Image 1 (tube, helix red, strand yellow):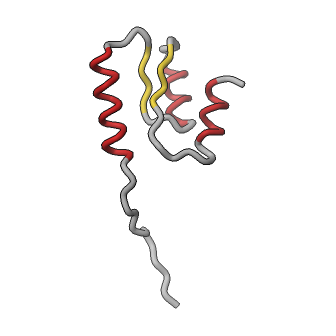
Image 2 (tube, rainbow, N blue to C red):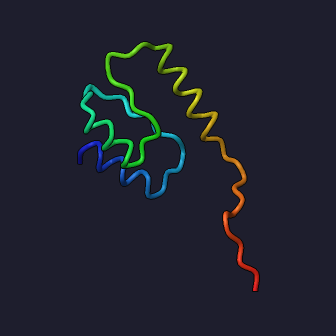
Length: 75
């Protein structure tokens, strides 16, 4: 199973932020990962401080907030 398939299967039940760390740095690979459920993508080698900042951002925006419905139908 490749990483994209793992990502797709994870997104079937896992709703927390996912940051992909990869040596692949082509635009196609990055777009593919983001379109398949990744919240962020970081290519190796990376700076530790940048990874930590991206993790903080993912946690900040991935916090479980009460979601109000966009549409409500009352009968």
